[in-house]
Image 1 (cartoon, each protein chain N blue to C red):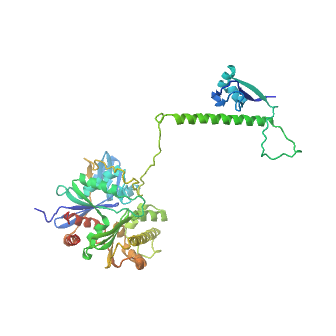
Image 2: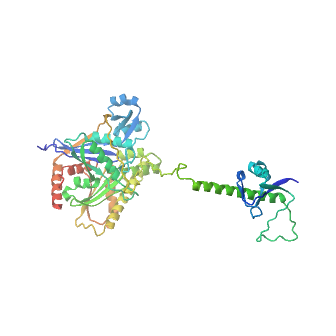
Image 3: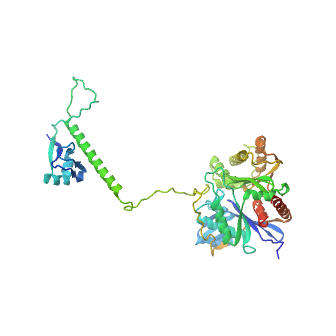
Length: 192
Length: 338
């Protein structure tokens, strides 16, 4: 006969929190005034030990001979002639797991409460901004809104750069150009 | 007294592949071109570059080869030359690229002939097929550079400039299509008034990238083939795979352009009434590929029946590389009230 779990009972008329297990037991005699924890949790919990020493809580070992049954109304009916094995170890494990989950949920709620009540400046907030990259050979159009300011550097032309750039030069007679210029001036005058 | 041989006013066509400046000098229209590309090299190459008379700039302790030499050097070193502009516009936040652009503009324009000389510079229209296309930043950067260089800048649409330089005999009426490297610009002008302007986010770079993907090579190699003596009007199947791919992509771009022009016309139905047949002017560096005009004419015939206006002829710009700069130079010579 080995101890697989412990039933923990609250002896006070107020709720008690087993801090390092994240379990809160309601007042004595209530629906959640007791819980079952694994022997492992029992051994490693300093808070529990402290509360037991102060006689705030009491612990009852659960041996593997204890059968815990959960009968669901929707569970299929087992035929009478079918042998039923009483796997107490599994039942105890399930209970322990359920308590562990409860403890984790309780802990999670605590964390959420802390986060919700923390002032906004308590921790830095990083907001992932969309990153715009320019790829050579691809179009790079600004996605700015119409009222966004356009940043133009105050100075673009490099000063004092040692530059030796040659260009390809062509020239054409100016007569055709002058004819076009006169025609354009006339066309624009007519338009006005 | 005004110098009639060298009247003030100049222009600059700011393209993804080339910067072309124009001004009147001693009774001639002089254009200067610098390739819009650069590559950085370690400082120890400076002496070699000087000896080879290669264009370079020393910027913040870095050696930068600029212009055609950048492409040649990149090919030599099996690297890609960098481009300060992409998709027809200056890239936002690319401050190094903006400084290179400023250097190129300074060199290609030279100093103003008079303080605050008027300089008309080209801007594309927003692309109708690119979400969020915006040319405001691009135009603002170019304006700032020109102001720093001592000019009084004035922006003008690049396709409109083509109509000004090429359609005097039609009283500045025509449909100009500028096939650039980063994009394709379109303008319909009637009696020197623009009826519509738009651009498409496809151009020479789109052809290079697509053809390169199709045959498993690099865009740089496709670009080099495209700029060589290939004839894209020849029947498919008679050339190399690269030429076939280039031809297919050019044909697709032409069809795409004509379809978009028809769409824009239909959208503006009721707003545009043109009674006389107009010419189509095909320009831009991408249109320099041999056989491009023939291919355009061939494709246009397939669309002619549903084209909303009568077309009198389809012709190339007298010089597709300098046509925009020349048109802008005309604008720079106009008085402000004209």
